[in-house]
Length: 359
Ligand code: TXA
Ligand code: MG
Image (cartoon, rainbow, N blue to C red; front, side, top):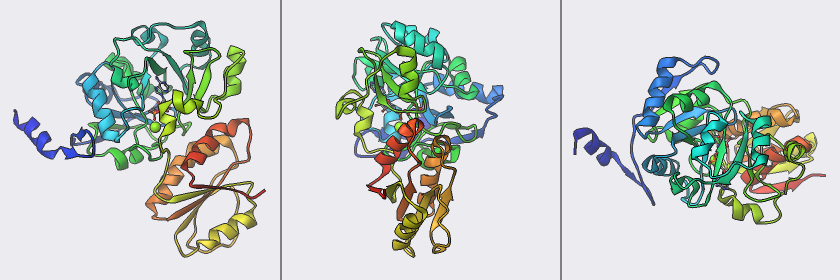
């Protein structure tokens, strides 16, 4: 065994399950509009060597590896502490890369690809048996998407690999929308983090299952059910536990900060103020659009406008920042509901330990 390998073995952290190798993690700033060629080459070489590189997409940061390398896929699961039954999304630089990943591209997929790629729409198709089954957690299907943004696309093109990449957080924590969030969760567990600044959308892609008709939304996202319906004519919204069965990821605890989250629907400034002051002096944080007026100085407030896009962009960083500030309770004011708030309400409901309707 060479010295380097021996050092890695010595440093291996043994968790409940798989072994996580210790890495010296490099963090490099990259211009998202004009990524430096030398840095992208370094990142692509790491992917070719079967290592882990975290990078920004338009939705959230992902932690990526060559989808065809079973060992690298195992390393992703270990680094995140991800349950082995939760499949990964494979990222491509264009529809031409699908041939080696899927067995069939239905007409509906072509239509959606024309309309929404590159962009935050993930399609579940039938997996080509060449792809290691660990990518799909043993399922006969595979989730694929073409991300937007030059850093992600160049990493895929330069490495010549389809890149399997879940969100670059520790399993169960809010997805990372800044390189610093990735650093907090995965320093020492990945080889390189490409810092391309904050992500634009802020919540994860819409996941649509096209292996049956009508197609079903397994995870709501920035591209709404109505927009997909406008292209395909019909889709199925999940009923009851159906999406849990079909999309293992939705089964697991998700998007949760360490603090207890109280999600408030239809909260008035007075009602919210009263709720927050119940915890005053006890480290409470508030996220929402209401102006709370004069409240206890100890209440840490993060406000944005009452708009689905503003909430999506900033909700995960706000939850993380309040965690960092050490609060034990976070009161979140839900945005006023509209067709565009489906995805954000899905994530907030999963993060919340309690939902309070003040109507
Ligand atoms: O925006 C995004 O989708 C980000 C960026 C990095 O692309 N990625 C992301 O990946 O959110 P992850 O692993 O955090 O979430 C993947 C979701 C999970 O809910 C998983 O269960 C589902 O996609 N999924 C993956 N493969 C699937 C499959 N074959 N069938 C059903 N669901 C699948
Ligand atoms: Mg995730």
